[in-house]
Length: 219
Image (cartoon, rainbow, N blue to C red; front, side, top):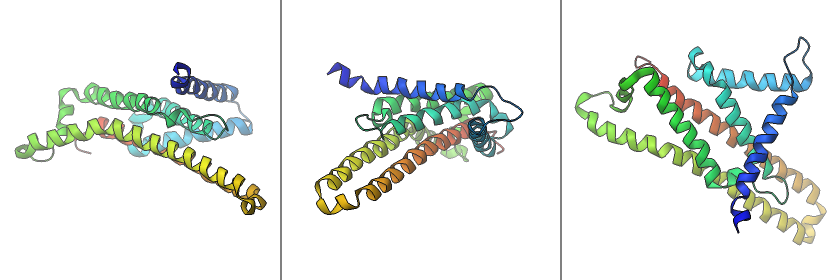
């Protein structure tokens, strides 16, 4: 039982190792990059543009974090497509750990940049309604790591169960066996699309939360 309960930890470490190995395999930047290097350079440019569009040039310091989160979530989701393995992100504990990192980081950055003036973000536009807005904002912010966790968990867990059901229908039904290769390819394509989309959603929400914490009041 203990080994089963810790399987998400081992698979999470595997996803980290795969992410690190993929980045290290790209090697140092070169004048004439290989296709593999160009792919990773494109990924970094994608993350940079995401951060700059939402935070500005001062947000470039967060690019390594967002890029790392994206890689870990992507490869964790991808492990769920391997028969016999379950995605680490199909476990609430894995997702909550990442969500808490994002939650703590953007609040720490908010206080670091604005001091106690960061609390003005929670007060709303009217000083008369500040206590009401403060309570609402605190509840909203506390709910963020929970929603980040459950959104990713529900999609990965539900997608895995749906994949098992669909594959079972293909195997047991003689009619679908005739078109099973095409059907299975379709299922794999949909699953891979979900893996990519859920990774992107986790990244963009992390950037948006950071943007709200570090942005200046006049913005």
